[in-house]
Image (cartoon, rainbow, N blue to C red; front, side):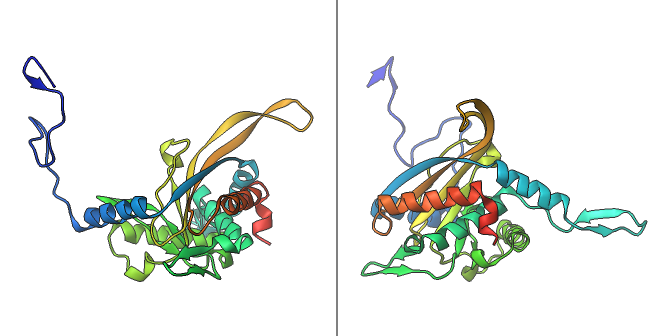
Length: 258
């Protein structure tokens, strides 16, 4: 279709991009991401479950832990930098690890002729880097303290951005977490990263009016999460059970720490 001789159809692949446009050659990372995620959407039967989770107690736990962090001494005898600073993402990793332990049937992957169930919660964490993203894995996250998870995640993210991760540090695992809350994204659905069977998409926290048990209305800190599941491994009821376990740990975080 043309109007005044101008085509309203997009230029074919490989065609001109027009004045001021730019062609960006594909590097190895972008080619790999494109191939793996295309394979994921074509071969993995995705379904999605979304829940709103109250995170007031999780935020309070984070604040208390950060306030209590010991501080190094400066040469002048003053308090220096704290020994650690937990992020919401660190706590989400711990709660997700606990949920996978609570629902072991979902801590699994599809292996074509069988399903492989994992003993430990090995969780990939999506890290944005220049030109794409990579998913370093926190191994045995259910056994690690919050401070250990925080330190390991910070170190892995730094080396990921420097492209210095070893293959064994970003391969394997049964599940992953993608957190876009720091960008103000309220809710989204992530594509499963093979061989994982699930990925949890975490949105931004917000203050929201909620009905209390006595019928009155108050405000609470809420967060929306969406679980993408491989239906070959995780059925609807099992995925709902896993998401409910995560919600329970987030709303009562001490239960994941004892």
